[in-house]
Image (cartoon, one colour):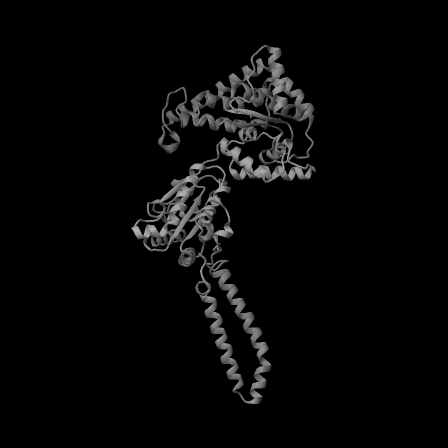
Length: 551
């Protein structure tokens, strides 16, 4: 229900109390000065009036200069002001129907909205309403969007700020910002019956406090004030619900902030699964003109695993821009493909590559491709390229399967063997290798290290997560044995990869020749080359769509 004119005026006077007082005092002083000048004799009055413009100019310049110095150098750029404004829910205008996927999160949100709507009934029965909701999850998953939808569906004002706006290097400023923010929220709650206060990036002020000599005292004070204010809204009858969001792990936040009574509900976000990604692609594509017959939404949902809703929206937006630049009347498959390449791999660089480098890159990438196809069950091929992008001369673009929520040893080994395919391809062809293997070695070593030090997958049989304790706590003999297990994994992976590539060398050469001729090969071209090789070799093929249904 909208407040009447008197309530609006009272709210405006409360929000602008300082301005009203300053204006009133200024008007009184001006009136007093006019009365004083009018009471003077003719000559002094004329003399004073003639000097008044100069006095006013000097005083105005001096006043602005001192105000600037105080604000800029003593209290920070914003003088403890809050860059959050109360928005009516109609102005937020985000509904649950606009929130795609995350069905379990939306169910919790509906429960929160229902409780907000029957706030008075809760007070009459003595029950305690939800006063804090914490959203935890990776960036781009729609935490802020859902908070706006809750405000819209509940029909109450929505105040928004971020933790970084609350923190300040000057003593006491962060705490004052917190007090001012909650003061605004209380006034909104009194006028409209309830209010949602959304704090994004709460980890900026909500990290675990340190009480040592090097502690950030100002951040501690800001967090302490936040805790006091949240205790205040739980004890008062002000219907304020604090919704906070963070991308940081939950264990990085201060335990006092997480306790019951401050954040009663915790909503845990995950990256969308394939079904949700299909819904997201359908939603974002529906806002554009696209080739519905040529673009398979299930296919694109399959190759964009581990992408957030923001990533998927970016892919569609970028493809729309590419289609416009190419003067297409709608988004086509090649536009989506180019958009994904640009986002994932970067822009093509117009740098001429020496012929011997180009050939070596082709053998390197062909080695990756063949090893991944036959040895790495967790990856599926999408594209191979020897076009210069970012700092790389070539790439095998794969997409991950996500049916398995955990990995077994053979799956880790397959990933390592795929990484070592480039090294093995160069070594078999030239007898030596180039510096292009650095990134492959890095990821292979990290994976092997995790297998041994975290998952107990080394042949030495050492069990435990050795990364959870200090390296100094491990004996030299144990570290030596663990490192030997890592080296054994890498050596075994390289041996298996070399054996495979030597056996499939005709297929490697076929890919090299196609790459040198066309620079890039798309999914269907890759599959055709493998099909021809398998048919000639008399082996049963392994389809590139293994593990993914292309409807």
